Image (tube, rainbow, N blue to C red; front, side):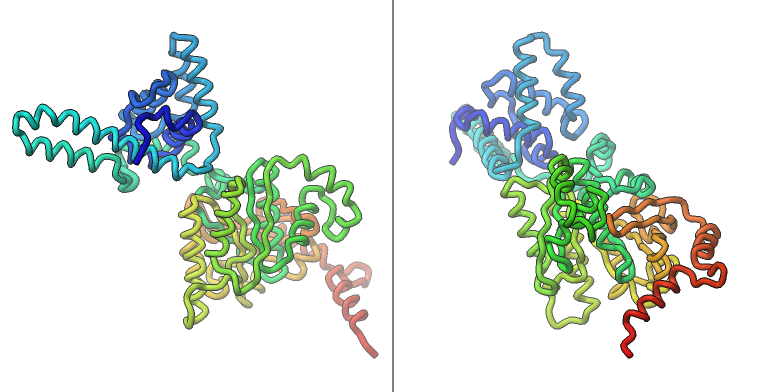
Length: 454
């Protein structure tokens, strides 16, 4: 049961309909055969719908805002031009609240309008006794508006696959990686950072999340290892550049900096081993219901989630968890970053390769971008390390970068990697001078001294 005219639904409903037609291609594809600009009484809404239909006829996708700006300038009626601009502004600003209901209701309304026209047109056929034509007409009207999304149609979707906003990548703090990722991790992508224990993996997630929030994106950070408050203090350290162990004494600086950050950050802690990917999904949808639409998801870390499969070996559990995480990224059309451990052999390597993934090598197959962070004990003393691109669906992999690291504030400075220069630098830092011990040995002896119990 639908209302008799589109005006009865009210202006807000019509704005959400326009928003859906302009920004949700799948909705437009499904409703295209029953969409009629004459169903709208407002001249501005009629113009917008006519333009959407005209553009779709030719390019098989929705018109971009830049295209509409050009077409609006061609409107000779100044009053209509102003009205169209206002409607477009409201449509692009419209929230996604109740959008599913609006799309379903409008689809039903359009199908009912199509059926009504078919019934009225069948009167003459009925008088002529042409029942087959009536049957065909009614059947076509009943089929109108059904799901027509069969996938990416190679020829027809040429325009849409070259749109700048097709993938909507969220950039990383590291330009070298953004270039390799064609801008960053995009909608539905799953990125993974491997590393040894205590190597700075969780700080990498803080750097990714903090950079995104500072650029105005909304980030949901899930922690299954550290407490919410402590993760929050890590972000405080990242934004203020004050070491996390000193951040408590600089609350005034935190209160000065944090309100200026344009994006939203939600940190949520869940218990290790009891949380499934369904728990994460429920919280994401709850956030959306509260009008916090995330742009980026961080999970620290996926291996600590519980599998839905029971009584299977650990490898099968891990594979199930990772497959479900990738599925969630695709379903919600959001990028997800997480971290994972390397095995014991990988912890000893200067450059961590894909075969050193702990638990299951299949992690690499499931993810879209895999990065390893190698830091030996001496690297931790010297604030150095190596990033290695293990896998990349969007460009080259197998590349290694040097990185200067300050894990007290989550700062990672990526630079070109030169193995000889790196070894020489470590040698200079480690070589005893004037009979003294190097910095690493001094630290080790100091720890041994304080741990010594006579």
